[in-house]
Amino acid sequence: MGDVLVTLKVMPEGVDSDLKVIEDRLREVDAGRFNSLEKVPIAFGLVALKATYVVADEGGAAERLEEAIKGIEGVKTVETIEASLV
Image (cartoon, rainbow, N blue to C red):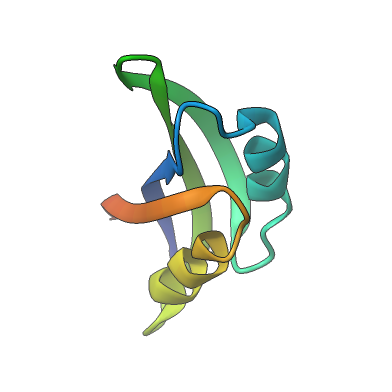
């Protein structure tokens, strides 16, 4: 099997959330291989984080990655916005 590049939209709990701490924790997630991180302005000072990871092309890998990220303190929601074979 190959690998899948998964792009996730990570929303912090609010504008007061410490994005630096969340960014550091996103880089440490072990459910996938960290690839990149981008800040995306949403509205009224709220910034989402667009993170990409490489995971194995096997059932449940993307879901395990999402669950690992949801467990990060300060993260409100996680949404897979794209997945493609690499």
